[in-house]
Amino acid sequence: MGSLKVTLCAGAAVLAALTPTAYAADGGTVSVTPASPAPGSDVALKISGCDGTTGSAASDAFVADAKLVGAAGTLAGETRVRSSLEPGSYDVRITCGSVTVKGAIKVVDNASQSPSSAPASPVAPVHAGGGGTAHLAAVNARAAGPGTAHAVVGLLLAGVAAAAVALRSARRSRRTG
Image (cartoon, rainbow, N blue to C red; front, side, top):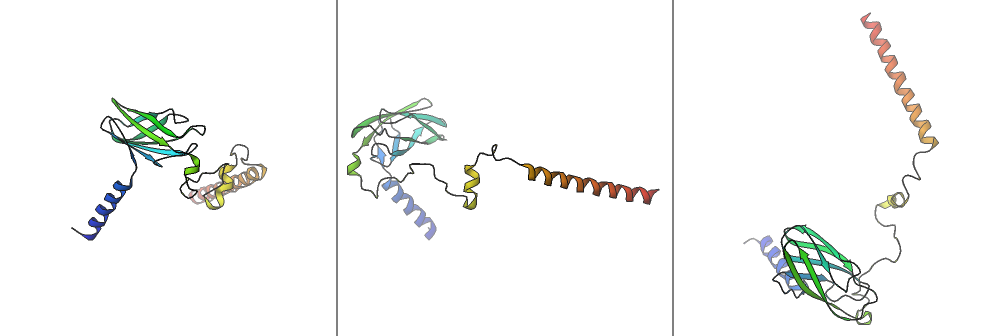
């Protein structure tokens, strides 16, 4: 076995060992990241053992049901834990196709989470990514559409194109005639 294959297999084994998995009663597995979220945290769910390509995860711990999508066998989705939730264990019911997987999520107190393990999420809209185009992404395209300057440049270019076609047609008609 080549060193690349050994490295990939070892990496997959470590990843599988470190992936937090919640208990699932019906044979499938439910992975929740972070494994023990605090109230108000975003959580990512990954479910294996499902048939179909869509599903949903419902719990009293969630602000809204998580919509799950993916390939047959493995679905993933995201949701948020209610910010007013008391710490404890909450049931999670995943429905995908004809399969229902039941699991649990353990919600911990905000004080028990260290600042370094808490997920970083912005409080307000953030202009990020795109380099110098972040401003363009934030501007309403319909409100900042083409103005008078754009219209004048467009008319000038159309006039130049029309004149070029007319001159070319005139030269061709002289040669053939």
